[in-house]
Image (cartoon, rainbow, N blue to C red; front, side, top):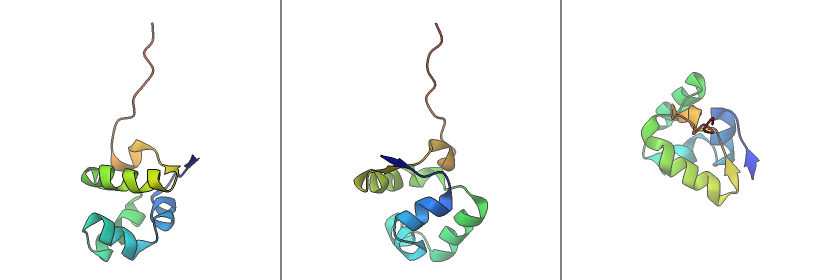
Length: 74
């Protein structure tokens, strides 16, 4: 599974600004703002990561301000 590291990469691989706007139910201007801020709204995490998995892609949860699981230290 290929890993994408930026909002630009995620948006481009999901079909571009208009496609991501349609996928998330947001406006094109919002998606353009996500590119500029290099961060997605947390409430788009599930729909976007599901779409990425269908394309055998992944992205760090931090792009959605999610906390990534950490390995337990014994």
